[in-house]
Length: 298
Image (cartoon, rainbow, N blue to C red):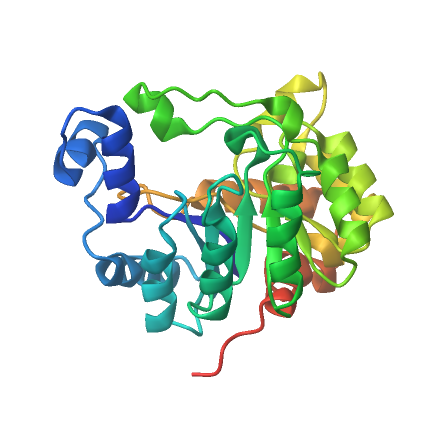
């Protein structure tokens, strides 16, 4: 089993949040308030993630640098465990150094997933700044572009009372389809099955063979469609995208909560309920991730 969606809440992640809050808190102060564990160094956090994956029978995982500018933390982790960890990084395309950061993250640091949050960064997917980043990803085989669509809620920001002025209109999976058609050899990943824009995510996947859907999080967006169930979501996604384009993920992030086995159990139950074949089950829960991000030689 592999997990395509985990967040690497590094020391730099908390330092960035503290600076945005403007209270002069240390990382220890912030973690104490949240009742979360201090992550320590990137290498220490990598070690903890490996123990957590081992304890839960997870072979490999994608770790996302979860604030722009934190590429080095995840790069340190994956350099320590290249056979187990794949590095993704959040990028703000509106930043003046976005192109340079992308080149360095992919070309020098070995990260393999560029994560775009158009609603957060207020940059439409049709913007030329996004295209510049996507072109870099497309020039490096083995790289994917992850685009958060639909509803966006960042729990830690809410806990800390930080503003989240997101423009949800910008997170339309149909914009991903446009990019995917323009770059047919570049994998695109829409997390959380579209996070409330399930219909549009399915349309994107149906029209673009390089669009993949990750299944991560509790998928609480299901409540926006009365009567919809997780079983029905999986059945429909499989009918449209097929098992080869679904990627299991949990959206795990902080410690001591760690890896979210409850999400795995719920998704496994949904898959079992619709009678998926063992071969297709293996693709969703591991094989597709290995195909998109082949394990590094160690």
